[in-house]
Length: 582
Image: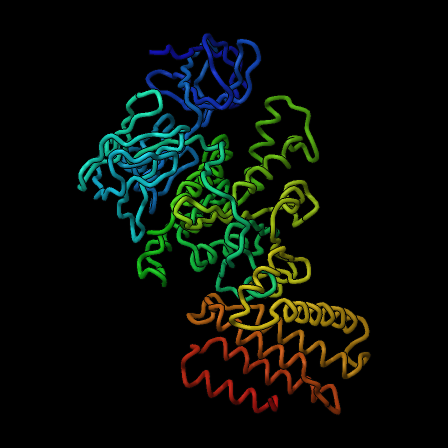
């Protein structure tokens, strides 16, 4: 058996320790610092000759010079297998609920538990025969996890072709029991269980990459219409404090049409994470009629938890997402907030005494952010099934300054930008996404998919956006010269833009009907607005124009609160069309 490397602490800077070691180690390797009977997990982040710099994932109080260090010979890895769904982990994949049972209300240093339950038995159904040749990622069988068929796959750590020599009978097994035996090209026999591991900082992908083509509907009109995202795409939601970034991400977790949601709370306030933990078990998923938590994995590394594990939390989330994507499922990763993830990188870079970049962030900030978002994408697996991983990151720029490095580095790589604005949130316009500064690269492909609901979708979006911008310019003029200083034509254009803003772009998340707007209802509403945009109105005075459009605006708002199939909806829609003479 290979002897593991060992070392002793010779210097410390906060949670960064310098270790004099003997043996062979590698970058990213997990190591353990001894303090009495406890072991504190850490990661090798730099090696120079026989001195390693390791980052401890815990408070280092009590660790002294000459403290012993053991190196594990393993990189920081995620445990992958049945039982991930409904789980709540920290950034190192420690199950927080089980830790709470052992430690009480406060986290105990040096307490690490298995991410997946070793005692629970899963009903395994074989899908492979003896003699079959398989490669990494091929399906061997399946178990039922929530409402999904969780595919048991050939371990991704295996790089060669294997021949199946034995398959367990269909029945109940723990994740560590052998369910398949296989031999490699050298004749070596391998025992395969439901449990496998994968380094979290290495992309997990097996299959043919595809260009994203299917639209990811969110039930939010301002996103599905002018700024859509495709499954397998990327997006970011920058915004100042209090503009609604976290609430927006909660909406996406609840209503987006994906199979599984991974929520990564990296540095988020504990109170907002508690809201997720309380809501998701009691909210019912309309697609499955099961609690929302059944299709969710939550990675918690809040601002009150050790900062050193914050960097690991986003990688842990995306690795779990990649694993489920390999089953042909649609996955959404929500990282909140990538700014605090970047701050953790800045802190680590400072302790390594690296040359700082802009605002003291490390010079490699942009490449790290790009590498994270590049792990999104759609892939075609062997059975021609398409799996997708969509990544959305909340960005918290200080003072709402979108020119700061994290926001700019993110904007360079994402496919959609949903910019939240202080001005709109102060005006109680929710969601507070600013239609003027936001954009998407996916509109053309989304328009092609939406042609079944409405033709020339892209052209209609461009027309609506143009009217909104022109209306905003007229509003600025009115703030200077007053309403009397503009023409009736300009007032009509402004009132059209107000109807688009107040009745379409805004939604009431506290209303049972308006909180989620399906795409067919969105398309019908959008087509009605197009009719209003195209119609030429004649009024004698500004007051006549204002009163008429205010009446239409109130009716359209009420339309949003009525179910699509109800008689009240149909009657109100008829009344609106009569008023518009269409």
